[in-house]
Amino acid sequence: MADVVLYAQAMSRISRKKLSTTVYITADQDEELRLLHKTTKVPIAEYIRQGIDLLLLRHRAELPGQQQSLFEELEQGGANGCQVRPVADV
Image (cartoon, rainbow, N blue to C red):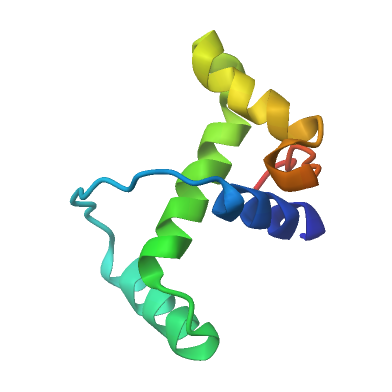
């Protein structure tokens, strides 16, 4: 779990322009995200972004080289010195 936290912290430090999109989730997902937000005060959108980042990390071998270099940089201590290891079976 510490790997997930480190990864999330590293990704939040990388300045990225955010694009607006629509995502359809189940009622159960919505309910759990709202409860999590209520407890932690972290925006639901941030949890969705982190989930997407974790999915991309998990499938990075399938990404074109341009995208893959971001993850390699993070693993080698990029993103303000935060080192990130891949998360196994999220």
